[in-house]
Image: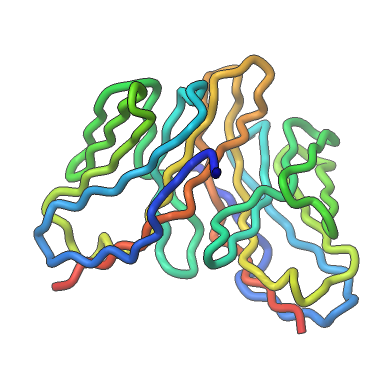
Length: 115
Length: 114
């Protein structure tokens, strides 16, 4: 079974703090994604990575950065947390388009509250 | 107009009912279609995955794709209270160099009452 794990289920941070969200997948997947999910807005893509050290902006990258130093690990960084970044953050991975597979496998999510 | 439209509900049905969940889309290049189930405060889990048109069945679940109408459906037979969750549709085009980015519907919240 594919397993995607996220470092924290619940996180409370203060405005202005630097926040790191970690995601690890154990299936040697090439592609990894970070989303945020908010009521009424659905899933929105923040960043994705299709290879180690490669990244591309998604639909809402402002205020976020990412790091992928190893294939299995994809980190989301909030440089200076703000209250409007309070949300559910979901990490996902996808095997490889070379195999014509598009399905993504999600982690359990991190519910981040910024006060 | 959003690329993928999905009625957020909520949809409430009695136990044992047949449930029909639907999404419409505007991009005729979409070839890969998925349904995810998301329980409250959990991550989405992949339920069904289909390529191009046609039906796919897995136990009580049937996924249907009608590309001519740009319409996909998920049917749940003999619905159970444990099916209560939010169901998200997702799709992707077949494009060379595509990095696997999916387009998601907003999700439909389903409640199955005992």
